[in-house]
Image (cartoon, rainbow, N blue to C red; front, side, top):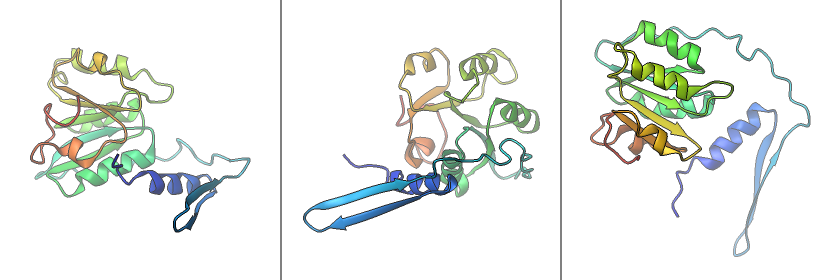
Amino acid sequence: MKGTGLGLPLCRRLARLLGGEVSVTSEVGIGSVFAATLPLHFEVVGVGAAAPIEMPIEAALMPVIIVDDEAELRHIMEKYLRDSRYQPFGARNLREARELLQRVRPQAIVLDIMLKGEDSWRWLIELKSTPATAHIPVIVVTTVADERKAWRWVRMRYCVKPISAEQLLFPNSTLSRHGACW
């Protein structure tokens, strides 16, 4: 089975964020061994203290809000959109997503439905029940396959992580409700 090629780079970045490292030893004809070394104690410094970065809204680009509490995955999806006709706006949580909705009129929202400590399904219901935001297409991304909930709503796609650029931009570089996800 062909992978996305993201596993090892994500592991290395996450290990480094935690003060550790990933290593590999390999022998031809025998195989490879990958190891992650992490410190026993990890001190969280300044989590949640940083203010969101103000980004100017580009008139020629269509805004897309990416809501994911995992910085690496949010960054990857933002990178997928960087050279397209979309302008990504990242949100670490639902509060930041609400603030962004006050500033921009997104073409779509990419939502990690399993945000830590938050009820993303409830927020999604509110979003789709509010006339001002009901029309916004939502791409639900998560590590848990439960697409039945996502299908209750019009204009929604459901993707299991890791999501590829093709899934996010399919078809023909447009975020739409049709595509490689359910």
